[in-house]
Amino acid sequence: GRGKRGRHATAPEASFCPAVFGHDGRLMLCGDEHGRVAVIHSETMQVTRVFRVPGHAAIKSIVYSRKYLWVLINSADRTLRVYEAATVEAGGSAPARTEFKDVINNFQWKVGKFSSTDEYVIGGASGSAERPEHKIYIWDRENGSIVKTLEGQKEGILDIAWHPKRPVIASCSTVGLVYVWAPNYTENWSGYAPDFVELEENRVYIEREDEYDIVDPPEEELNKGQAEDNEVDIETVQMGADDLSDDDDEEEDERRALENKRIHRFALVS
Image (cartoon, rainbow, N blue to C red):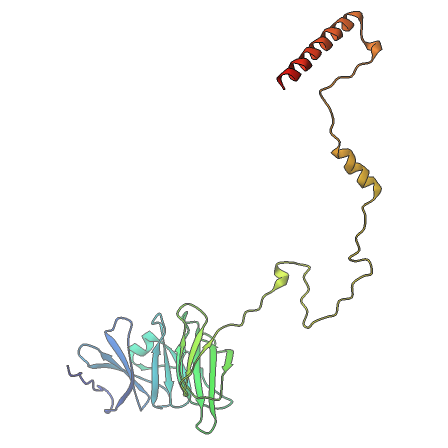
């Protein structure tokens, strides 16, 4: 059906540029070319409150953080501003919690987004028509300090997106290419072997003269090994002639006779 048209309640009529829904869909935030953000009830389409951004520059984009606790507003005065969502939805005016500018090149931000954890803010700059750029800036949302700068080909940037679970960023260029940015992990081999030494470049290794020579073990170790290999009979008892008495002689004769019978019996069976 036909869409309803919202009107400003406290400001002259203006054309709205960007618009975004709140966390439950009941409210919408709509920016105009005078630096105002209208808070509109999505069912009645009535403007309930108006939030004013300093500078009165046109609003280019409005983005909620993933948890809907913060709002990032990109204005035509080349500034990204972070506000608490409750402050913007309440209307009036308030200073931004943090502001981000490209103080060196003074480029206009093409797009601004939050990270998946709401801890960082990313901004993409396209440069100018004569000098296209593909730069992505990453800031700490709380203190506004720069964390990382990513620079691609000499192509304009259209949009950027942060992966919902990983520290990965995708950026789309004006020539139709999508770039994926991820941390460059380096393996630390010393964590597996404490005595491992990492080399910055190849090094020529000079081996010792006897490093790979085959050396025979000492003779004592050889004799020791042979002695360990000999089987020891712990069942046979050897006795001398002087140790046997007459009774022992008779028992010995009987034992030998039994042994001879066993031998003959064994021989027959075989």
